[in-house]
Image (tube, rainbow, N blue to C red; front, side, top):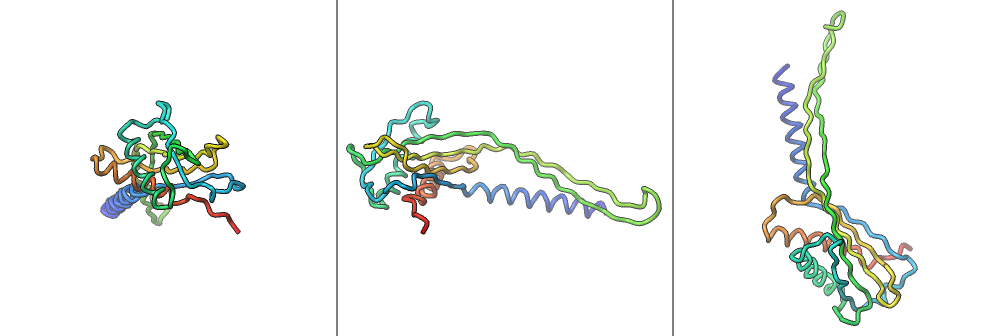
Length: 185
């Protein structure tokens, strides 16, 4: 019976670790936008200067700018000083805690409390950093927010420069994959 509990604990730990690493390779994205806004009139864009409150350092800002330029160029938009819409960026990081409990249950027969099985298991506590990138598009003529894309995902710990660039490219591609929004029919 002890070897069965040990096996279940090992299998549960393996399942948890697999789930954790699988979750690291993706982000969840969402969007919000003004449904009455005519996005077809947008042709050119520019970047709104990043403030210190945006939570983005210069190296990350450069990576984000390159990824956004690549994605918007692929959609037919042109970078311009006289832009139709401005791109504003914000980033937040928070530490999250994940608690996973595994249990093994037994059963038995007999009289009294000794006749029934017991319960055992393990609890695993993991802390990780989660990042949220917000990309806002502002109509420059109206000075009005018209579209917001948000991406949230687990941050890699100690990534290389190449991994940081790949992560930024992936996040921006996923977020801007929602733009321009399509109207529900």
